[in-house]
Amino acid sequence: MRFKKKIVLLVGPTAVGKSRIAIELAKRINAEIISCDSMQVYKELNIASDKVPKSIRKRIPHYLIDVVSVSKNYNVSDYRKQAIKAIENIHDRGKLPLVVGGSGLYMKVLLDGIFEDGRSDTKVRKRLYALAEKYGKKYLYRRLLRVDSKAAVKIHPHDLRRIVRALEVYETTKKPISQQQKNTESLYKDYDIKLFGLDIDRGKLYAKINQRVDEMFNKGLVEEIKKVLNKKLSLTARKIIGIQEIRDFLSGKFSREEALELIKRNTRRYAKRQLIWFRKEKRISWIKIKEKQKPVLVAKEIISLLN
Image (cartoon, rainbow, N blue to C red; front, side):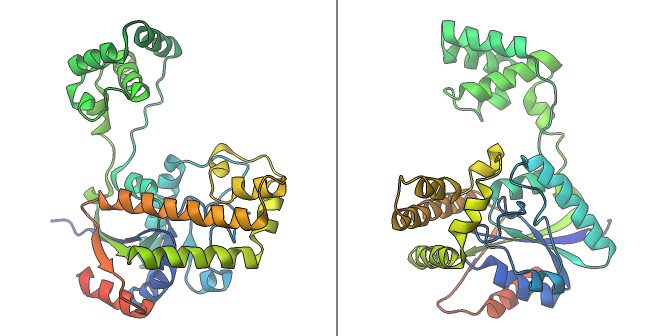
């Protein structure tokens, strides 16, 4: 049996303490860190994305931080390609890749691959949407059930966009999308993957989020976002928490205090969505962070579960 190289992943909601624990873990397992964070890829956002200080990154190499400008779109496909390259480079130097972050989609795509079929046909798509408008969504859904039942059972009958996409792929390639999705490359095939999730009492998590946002404002979050708003933001960068709230504050729509509270609320909601996503991932081994437990003790607990 071929020996598989190891990859360790450490995921969890924002503000749970991933970075500090990852640094302690990296010191002890000879690892280098790959960010799994959809905000930290942007060069201009240091406070908003709560990046690890450069002084620490000099001691423990971090990858996929400061990758692109906020004016550039960056997607999960870009992330996967660059993350895999980083994993290979880290292994080549005899180190262990430690993937750390809170982006559930980035994690999922990295581990399981992504279906990338460049084929699209505008005429076919328009025709399918016209049929849906004329006969209803159920008409197209029944057609999908006939040609690709495996895809259909995973798509809600009202999710017209995905129904149309599945039918478009079938009509342009003559192959069911479910069959083509099976061909995605999973990292589990070539690597021994250890996946850990960090959890903490929900009330304590929300308190830490509120405290972090206060600290961000004190460090100059408003000034950082103000500079960013002078650029033409990409579609992906516009979705970052803090961008719209501070834009509204600067335009006079909200007071500074109202913007602060909105960012806290929206970050708490984001953390809740992160937890919902990660809870669905059955491969995660959960680590419950205890009251006032130091990062080094959490790191040692993870190490005890690695072998």
